[in-house]
Image 1 (cartoon, chains in turn brown, purple):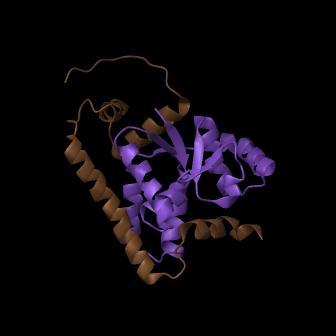
Image 2: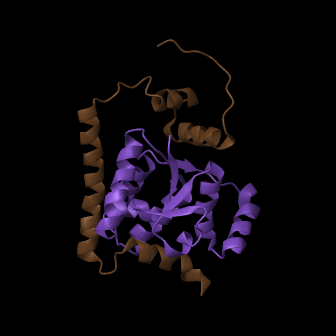
Length: 89
Length: 136
């Protein structure tokens, strides 16, 4: 693929995000941008995308089901509030 | 494109650890984000908070927690790093709204990204100008 060298102005937080992700994944910032723009990756068909989304959500739900079986107080709103308030009594 | 900052309790709703009327809209946020129809932001702290509750409240082992944290990190949420240079602004939010510093991190990201913070948390929802309830 032809690569174009260019200079762009982006938000400092976008730059930080791209830089951290590039370091973590040992890739270049350009590769990350390509991926985000879906330039270097073939676009999933609508059906494939829907299936992938459902598969990913199913994973989250499967962990949630296991949690509900083993933990009595699982309500996320309540426990997150308790955790954030824990040191503030 | 619509954009929102999300609280960790929205991610936990993807796991259906909320009431069904909250889980459905949380799932829609996930779908729209993945379809490129909405942008979701969160502080990097969300991943730390998730790690903590998975171990200490939800009793998950290292392997399972690790996989779920990785999937959340790679889900498409745009995580925002908050450096030490922002601590004065966090402090200001803590005092202005009577929040914990943890809450303030989410509010800070919403303000910086100029979007609403979506949460199920009653304390944060008191900050009406910046927060909206899941399913609203």
